[in-house]
Length: 58
Image (spheres, helix red, strand yellow):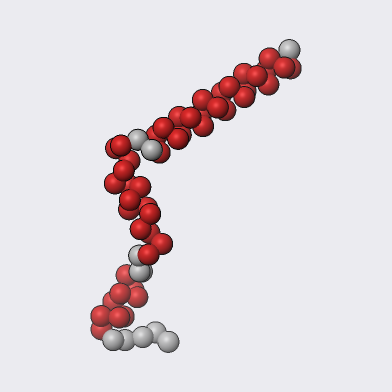
């Protein structure tokens, strides 16, 4: 009985994982993925404002 429950839980986990991968790589998420990929390179607004005006908080 325990083996059957383990098998069902494993199958459910695999289906859930496949669904998440399918959702993440679907074509309607392409733009959101591109924006998320650029987030590490985005400057905070307060830094951009300081840089434009020549002021510094240091």
